[in-house]
Image 1 (cartoon, rainbow, N blue to C red):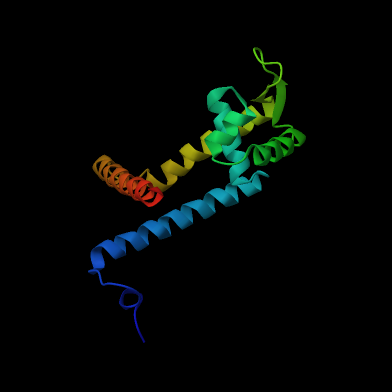
Image 2 (image 1 turned 45 degrees about the vertical axis):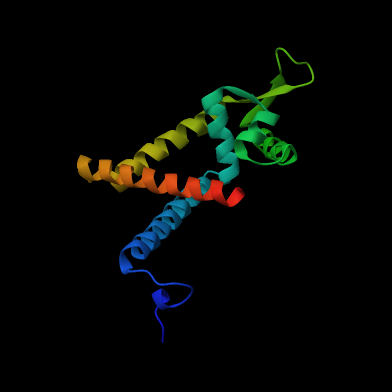
Length: 159
């Protein structure tokens, strides 16, 4: 029987691959916890992203939401339709362009955004609260470097 480290192309000493595997495990567990919390609130990740963006911006046209989400305007229309049916957003006339509409949070949508913020802070305290400040600073530094490498690799793959 072969270990995972013996399969595939090339070889690597255990340290980088072990850290890589831990990063994937961490990402998967955090993503699952987030999905579960959102599902209990009746949200998908995409709908929560829309609420988050609107909470930060105040109002956006659907074209700007599509760009921020990296998806088609048609997909955003469906998201906004669903969020509007759920009473979380509403469409209002754009003040300067009568062909465009702003999407804004309703009061229940704003409350959902506040819940998302509270949940994020509570989760951070629960998961990271007992770590010393030096460990948190080191984790943030390392995560920033890894994110930089991922971003660079993504750029290089596009060219």
